[in-house]
Length: 138
Image (cartoon, rainbow, N blue to C red; front, side):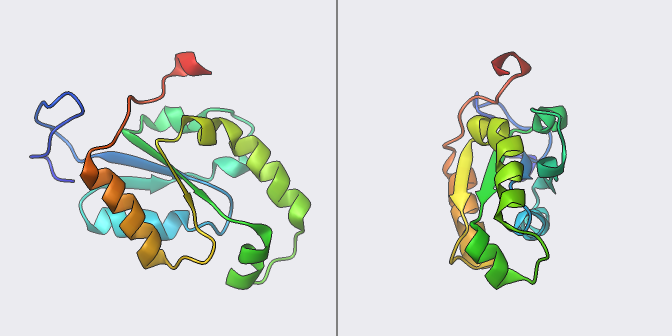
């Protein structure tokens, strides 16, 4: 989204839309962030699944928070791993506040990077954003 786009209040936006992407390992966060940056968004993936800070995503002041989800069987299809489903369960528990705050939830099982990008762009370009989560919602 370029600087000539509009904010949620209809005012001209002075900077690209900031999209923060969270989710478990291998959900596609980095791939999605690179694709969004290539399209003019201020996008970043956040490895919050490794942090005990419950709402770390808010420190990045997202205009849009995207939560990418993935199942353990899908992770094993995507890459070799040396850890079991308990690690994914713990990561999802740490990510629960981000999932609650997310503007958009995308389950990535069976979807390639192009399809995930399409879903996110559809949301971003459709203007269906709700109010940003705030620290007060903790």
